[in-house]
Image (cartoon, rainbow, N blue to C red; front, side):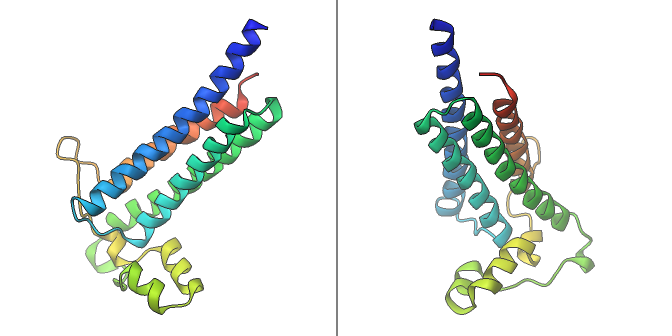
Length: 170
């Protein structure tokens, strides 16, 4: 019984760590927006949404404390959101590395689009990005990675941990 309790605790702790990691990354994003004054582009907001969804799933899993099948479902669902978010980070990295003459035209700010445009157009802008997403507004001074490159690293780490969680035995 003691081994079983240890395994259940470990399962719950991994889901808690995933939730806290997502919360930390969203907190950093809010700091960069509200304290550093960096305006998030539509693809940045989409990536935040994927971090939030992965974090919420992990929180539900932590609270639910699932058995083996539930652990797999939560783990793979969380991994799906992580790798989905990685796809949007890759799209933004691609836009940032395009030659200047191939960068799509800049659109209005996301807050303006939400106020004026129908939801379907706002969602399309969030999913495809525009010229605003190609602009590198911040780079790490030590390594030189941009925000979407850091996001991609976070999504990959998160996705791998969630796949591990889904595959490991209870």
